[in-house]
Structure formats: C-alpha cells, structure tokens
Length: 569
Image (cartoon, rainbow, N blue to C red; front, side):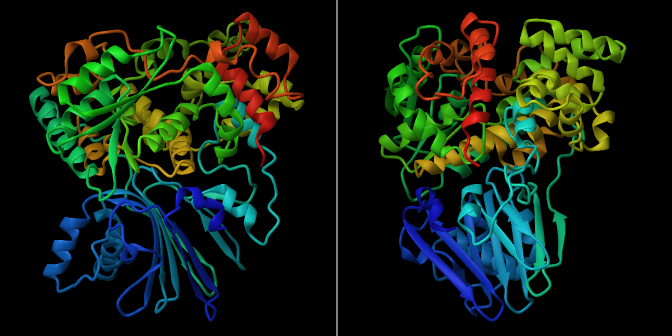
C-alpha cells in the first residue's frame, strides 16, 4: 500500500509495526521542510508512546514550537512533524485547531490504545479509509487500497455520480466500502474494538459581522499577507504558478514582499484566444522573478493522455491542467508550487454568483414544467431540469451539472429514477436556507466543486510528479475572516472578486483585472477533435461523438463520458 504511492513520496520510505496491537503505519516522504533524515516518518515521541505519520505542511510550526518550548518541551529536529507530536502531547485533540496548514495525520497513542485520523480544515489533503469490527485501512490515495490483502467491491453507483457531477462528490469513491474522511474532522478508533467516534474542529460559518467596506478591505489585506508569508516557508525549492489572472498575479506580487529571487512558471499556447503570456510577462517583469514559460501544444497533450489516465486516482472531468502545471514545475526543478486555487469560491469569482437572480426566478416555475427541458438541444438549457428539485443540490447542478438524469440513464442503460435517487441524496446543512444567496453559492462551490474536484485533481496530479501544491487562499484564518464579511460588501459589485481587487488596488495592475474573465483554460475543444480515436478505441459513443464533432456537445461532457468508460477501478 505504501509503495503504490511512491511517486508522491520519492525521498524516503518508513514503516512502524506493533504486532501486539496489530497496528502498522507506512509512510512515503516528499521532503520540503527539514530535508535530512531526522524528518523521516513514522516519527516517534521521545518516550516512544506516540507514533505519527503525516502528509502535508504546517506553516505555523515555528510559532507553535516557541509556544511549546515555553511549556518545557524540547526538540531534537527542525521538522514540523515533531511539532505535531508535541502539540498532541500538550493539547490532545485540541491540537488540530491550532495547526495552520494542510494535512492528513495518523496518530497512534499506544498507552491509550487509540488511533486518530485527522484531516485539515479545508480538505486540501485527501484521506480515505475503510473500517469494520475487524480491521481498519486508510491511505492518501485510493490506488493504495488495491494493494491491500482484501478484495474490494466496485461502487455500483460511481458512474451515476460521475456523469452527473464530473467527479465523485462527498465521501463517495469508486470502491463501495471506502469513503473519504470529512474535512476539518478527526476520528478516534479504539485499536482493540475498532469502535470509533468522529469530531469536528472546523466548520464553515457565515457570521456576517463586518459591514464596513474599509474594515473588510483591511482584514482581507492583513489576512492575505499573513497567509502568503506562511506559505513561503520551505527548505526545498518553491515557486509560484503564474497564469496571468487576478489570483496568481496577486499572490506573486505579495510573495515578492517576503522572498527574494522568486521563481515563477507559466503555461502558454499557440492558440491566441487562450494564451495569457502578455499578462504573465507583465507580472514577472514587475517582480523581476526567475520566470520560465512552457509552451503546451496539441502534440504534447495527446502524447501525455495515457500518463494522465494513469495519474488519475479517482475519475475526473478535469485535472489535465493540474497535470501539466505539476509536470512543468518538476521540469523547472521545483519541489513545491503556490497556486491561486480557492479565490473564486471565497470572493465570488464564478458565473454562478451572477446567476443568483435568474436562479431565484426559475425556481418559482412549477416543477413539472422542467421536464420539457429534456428535449432542448443545448446542454446549458437542459440543465434547467435540475431546478425541479428546488434544493441546494439542484441549484448547484443547474450551474455545474454535466449530464441530466435522463441522459445519464440512457448512457448507463438504467432507469432514470435510479439516477435521481442517487445524485440528489447528498446531505446539505439546514442553515443554507437561512443565509444569503451569495454565501449559499460560496458554500456549494467550496463544498462540492472545490472539495470534490479541484482539490482532489490538484493533489493526485501533483503527487504523480512529486510536486507539492500550496493554496494560500485556503488559509484557515483567511477563510474565517472572509466569512465574517457581509454579503452586501463581498458581492455588491457585478465584477467578480471586486472586494479582493479593491483590497489590493494599489499593487494589482488594472491590465490584470480590468478585462473579461478568462480563467485558466486549455484549447481542449480543438485538441480533442480527431485525436481521441486511437486512445479511446472501442469506448466512444457514436451519438455523443457526432454531437461533439458538430459542436452541440461540449468537450468537457464528451471527455467525462470517455473517462467513465476508461477509468480502471
């Protein structure tokens, strides 16, 4: 199980086994902080009672280390791993809420006979597990479970979810019995009985306490500056992915305040409608970074397709862009790269935020009338069908759904009611009906799209190339502070991310934000036409292929279908 994930941890491998308690912990290491062997894992406490393995980074480990030293703790390494052990010894389960970073952690407390699994506040790092009254398995990737001495059943419904969402939402995986640990939570297992209890140390809470525009700007500014400063901590080579958009440009400009000789990298295309080289160069020249630009063309894309499918730990309609970002970061000699992921969800950068009024009007239409949308040709009109549910899940799928239930049922040759009974049953918190439409959209984009797709894609694609991706916009304190700001301030302007832009108007060039939002998109539509036949031989649907070639089916929906036929469970 451990070595199936060797690409994500090429620098060291370790294992701890307690035969009396039947506990084994395996770890593969990608060295970012404390590069020598003293940072290897599993790591034991001084008294050998606590054994810990951990994936991720703790950015405030130095301040925690100082605090723990005042309580009399001493340290034999310079690693953040040792800080977690001693934070647990001092504060117990309360230590998780003190950690500022991204992590999945397993702690074996021999004296108590407990194994604790914990996952960071934003779900940046994945953790999957299976437990019954006889055994517990857990790992950072689903592929590790396939190496366990157990036969896993395929989840019979995974294609239903995948064709609807474009990824597997919530705690659903391709394996029937394996699920994802919820973000901001930890589970305590008794190693003798395997009984468990789950607890939460972080939950989204839109309190709307701040109504003053200037105060909101100041809070965003100070929180962002601290987040960027934290995320630059590393003993290994670290760079920034510079797409040329608002988020990556802002992170680069802020990083320039705290780190000299910045290393930035960008991806460009021959297709003029997609490349943002002009804006990438503008920021790179302003900060005088060591800038590397990588040209990505159709031939490189097609050649990489088999490797992309191998890298895919769970099926995804996206992730290709993360694959190439990580591939080029590796070629640039980096071990970690900073990304702007999370800004759109926090500050209202997606079109879904602008559709709120349209959505509210459509939801007043009687449910039975939405069935007529199935006969419409364009995908974006068919998605109106989702609104007949009149639930947050229906709202989300109206904005981001792929195939509507009737199409999914046809593609899988099952009854439409079987599709609907699955895709709409995800549970959402009751308070969503009491908060503003903007904050509701933020919650859905964060807890479904970002958690289910963007973060998972980013993690397994980066680990495939032995690259760590850091996301300052998902800093613990930044999220808490932004959720205190009133919706009337956060979303008051039609321009996406207006408040974020306004907070840094003195350093962010107008050329970067005063233009049509493009997003970091690839020319997939052009590249896929005529280039998938050999790769997807025998897996194409003639009707979908015809629609894709004629332009009535988007590349993303066609690709989703092809992945559903090709993904190896």
